[in-house]
Image 1: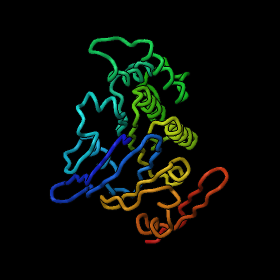
Image 2: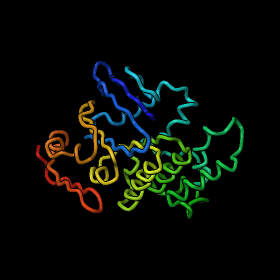
Image 3: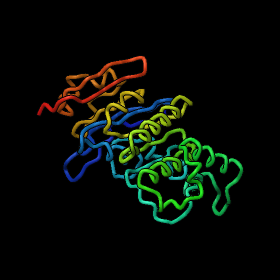
Amino acid sequence: MSLMTLRELTVRRGDCPVVDHVSLQVAPGECIGLIGPNGAGKTTLLRGALGLLAASGNSSLAALPAADRAHAVAWMPQAREIAWPVTVERLIALGRIPHLPRGARLGTDDRAAVDAAIARMGLEAYRNRIATQLSGGEQAQVLIARALAQQTPLLIADEPIAGLDPAHQIATMEVFAGLAAEGRSVIVSLHDLGLAARHCSRLLMMERGRLVADGPPAEVLRPDLVDRVFGVTAFYRETEDGAVFQPMRVTR
């Protein structure tokens, strides 16, 4: 079973391919880290896969009607603007909209999904706070909870831990890994290769719009590949507590 299939997905900006013939499949139970330097095409790949940008090739998600896509995947973009001064609980409840008939109110299952998302992100104390009055990091956690409340088999998040403090970065990655352990899948783009190595079961490495590596962290974060793509030397070791990866020195 595949939750997302891409075949030769290409997104162009003018004559320039920003994403160049990317093919991959996502199975249930995967926590996938999408990595690559700035400008590698990570955000464009995610948006093209979701049908949010014009693309050639094939994406199983982009081919779905919008209503079906909302049941198949939850999307968390980089932009974190919260437009309305509503409570945290009400904002998270927006994640249930795909499951509700037009004009219907939240039912028992919807409230349970909202409560579970709040608990999972540790937001119980913020439930009745006004979301626009929270810090940027707190708002990011609320938006992740909204995506969790959607209860889709696949969650795609574009740099969701950017701007979070280290404790919340780790906690968020643990949530994503926990979802994968339960049989759901997550694709998360991120720049922290240490967190990617430690919490992701699979890494997709992009360079100049192309997918140059796809596999377990130990295979993708090879010294020669990290040096070529990121221009750094790095330390990598598997420990009893998980993988440890640390960039050491710029090589170019």
